[in-house]
Image (cartoon, rainbow, N blue to C red; front, side, top):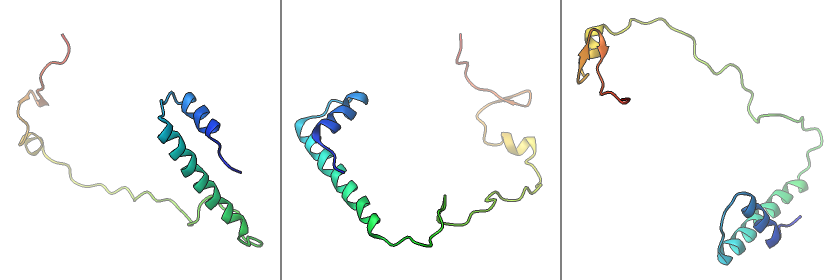
Length: 95
């Protein structure tokens, strides 16, 4: 399988990209190099290799929930530029 210049032009048009002639030629060459490398994978003997969705066995990667003490309101507002009635005071963004 190989990519032709017309394929790159078609994809560029779909993506609304304006490519120069040099970019079009460069992308055609680069995409063909990627496909050639991918075709090398067909040379590998994969008999007896189970299909997988991921190369590493994954289990729940979430950490355990641990209840910790919270900051006091005083600690929270210590670095705040302004505070009013226990809330951060910020400039109005709407009229």
